Length: 261
Image: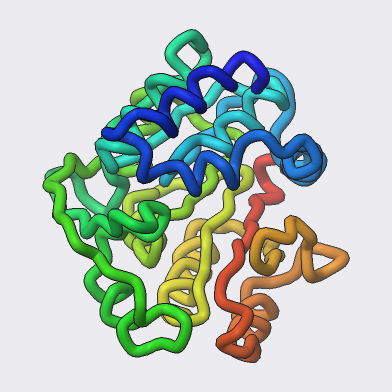
């Protein structure tokens, strides 16, 4: 990451990309955070793996997966974030960047962009509606729109190969992403929010139908699994239902034992 210090400084100083300053400050330049991410994801990603980062934002998971020795396919629809990712990873031939959203069918879709907080940009109108009714979210504004290409997870696999791990963080559109997957994968994660719990339950149902059989979750950015062992989807679903709204968000992890995960 040290080699990217000048690039990050330039991105923060550039009027075209300076709105990403908060994200760049949060996700780069903290060795303790990097070490925590590496230790957590090492259970899913090993040297030589292919990893998909769906909803790459400014690329902190790309950096983590590369430190762990994986090749990375990063999918990001926001033009501003794509510009930053191209600058940050231009010299890394093990990172492939796909400028698109990921969903159930190929085509195009309207992305609602949150200029002040780009990490919350979303293709889901339901997510924005839920945010407008929730404490702690009402101040968020989706003030711009972008028409972006839409690809499926199946198509990405056909093009780049079967990933050992897939991270999905697409602000309430995770169920649409998984609707575009027709085969079990060895391991993946998807973000959940307490303002859109039905999305997480649809994701659990989809993954169970695909044959994934071990589940866990981590709250917020803690990277600490809640359960000491992998549990059935129903156990995670019950846990999600019981979370207070203040839990806000986290990630569900799923694995397919049949793939040797």
